[in-house]
Image 1 (cartoon, helix red, strand yellow):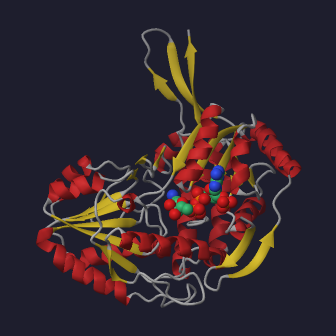
Image 2 (cartoon, protein in one colour; image 1 turned 120 degrees about the horizontal axis):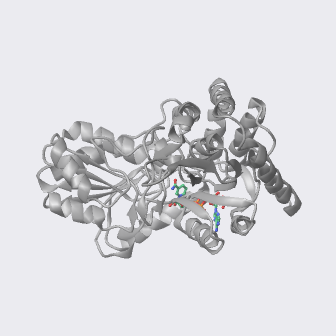
Image 3 (cartoon, protein in one colour; image 1 turned 120 degrees about the vertical axis):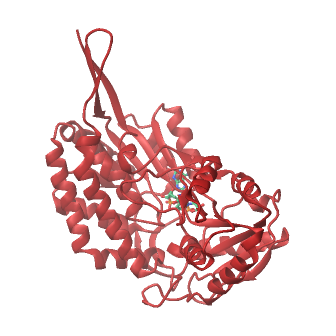
Length: 454
Ligand code: NDP
């Protein structure tokens, strides 16, 4: 895949970039490695000053950066601005809290005195996706830079200008060379870098295939890795849910980011007492969504990230139909020009069909009517993925009991799964392993060093 900006609203190529040569990549790894030796000795205060500066610059340049996001991957502009705000908040959060999170932990051994010190491990290699081009990078880079590690970042090939803009923010804030480096290389070349002894840890957010190949390389080279992969989150609606509010949440959960979020609500599961009412209102709402130019303030759903993504999704919908699914609304390309998909609702999906287990990465919801709570839980768990999920009811205790029985990394009650700086993010099963954000996220690439005094 060439590294280039193609505006998905028009499918026109805007700008192309050359990949870095082997020699340039080698130099970048060298810089990251040698900068680690000095960066690890800096104080938390010094690191925090830099990271706050990056956050401030991000806020100052919000409009320009948000426009880049929308240009390269089609996010509705107001949501792109929201992504910049969230990313700046994550930077500030770690600048403010890293020292506390990584403070020495005193132990009480039978003899002697001992404590655990959290030490950084070195240059880390991140491979990140296009769907939240700033947020995905920042949630990996901010905790690790605050912890004393250095970062090499290979961004998705369709968001090169966002990738460069992030590196520029660090440079403008005064980061030493090698602290944060953008690696302009293709996905194919990423696994090869894992072997490099100067790289100490790997983090990937993206597809199962890319995750598996990076994890395989990390395993072979005995390096730590964090993977954040796909999801097929359930959205469970119980008898006592407020249906109108729940429909609003369902639209937010499925259509935010034009449906391209790992933690989007993807499988809508309603118990039979309210299933028909929910389905009728949800279908009408999906059909009424305004699809169009992501820069237009009235647009609710913009294009997919690329024509290739659109073709993949259209093909999936066709395969689902062949397997017996019915299109309640949508199902087609929205316009001749641009990678636009009609917001779509599928019903009549069958458990056991291979399609049932696929993730739909776009504005396509699937709906299931179930007998009761137990059937809802069974269906929710009948998935290779285990990222997020949500439950809608007035009975919070009941919802917490249900949450306990769902195999996923995150369950939200009465709102779709979302991300905030102070809550852990990550999954189980084929959605990956490890956690990002909150206090937990900063401990992934740390050497927990025991120091004992006799
Ligand atoms: P990919 O997994 O292909 O892309 C994510 C990142 O991984 C990109 O930087 C990509 O680089 C890189 N990459 C691709 N192949 C490899 C490889 N073999 N080894 C190492 N790195 C690699 O995702 P897609 O963009 O193709 O999206 C496909 C699917 O991935 C979606 O339908 C969705 O299921 C999932 N996905 C999940 C995301 C999430 O937030 N968890 C985000 C995006 C996608 P390059 O761009 O150069 O190929």
